[in-house]
Image: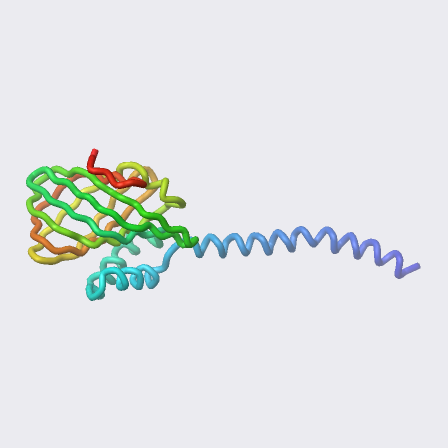
Length: 196
């Protein structure tokens, strides 16, 4: 009789505790998944080294600067672009966006600028992307301010923002460029010659 009277309360206690244990396990696995949805500085520097090649020390400094300002990105873009300016300017680029989930897609950008800016350059770009879960989040205009001063080669970083999505392009290029400008880049699924 004693055994039967202990079995029922014990079974009820186990059943009542099971959802709590399952919930605790689910909560733990969700927060681990959320932690791995961003890239670490080492992952970004490695991707940059593979793409840029020998600009290692300057690239590491630029990545460190962006991480100090913005934290860990949810995605990054690697690509190439060309730009030119004589007071008014244009920039065109293309690349691939990579998400931590393994998703990747081709992406294009183009845009105008205006300012005290003269010259032309070709660049390789590593764009750190914050608060984006899909390439469709980027299919809009991102405003920004950029300054550059180099002859032959250089590396620069600027920030672009639209609502809560922030982009941090890190560019290394060749050409001759001097000045500062204000403009925007429009990101799209297909290439376009129309910068507006």
